[in-house]
Amino acid sequence: MRYVGTSLGHGADREAEHWIHTLGLPAGVEACTHLARAPYPHVVVSLALPDGADADLPPTPDELSRSAAGAAADHAARRGGRAFVFAGVEALTGTLTVADLLARSAITRVKVLGGPEPEPEREILTRDFVRPQWMDGALTLMTSPAPRGRLAPFEFPNPTPCCGGAH
Image 1 (cartoon, one colour):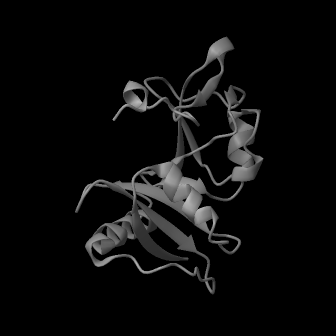
Image 2: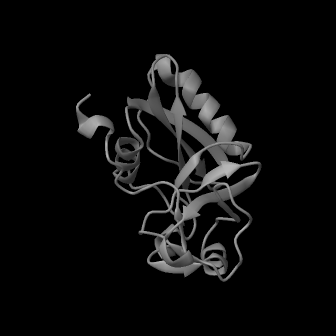
């Protein structure tokens, strides 16, 4: 795998994800978003490209290149990045058990925020939106309790903007 970071200064994960999906990336690519603070708050994308694969990316502006390089390094070391393109993501729809989610995708760990490790038969209501993070070398899905003893990914698909989007 070869790791590259790129940024056009997107202000939100959703914008960066949409942009990457328009590029027609080759099969086997893994894509992650990273929040960067410098030189101003923005979203960086890192890509893990299979050997021999290439992505036709526009050049990253000079002022964002340091953030892009840092994101690529974090992704390569498996210590950071919020994955939105990864092996098996398309199979993570509806309600799945923890065991099924792990078997169908590149996710290797499921954690419950503030709780113990979930049992393999525990159900996860995916809401068709699964965004695991690289943590300590493992692609980890953070979850929280959901109705009827289920779990749900901690990140919501369509979060309500602060103050109704007034700022």
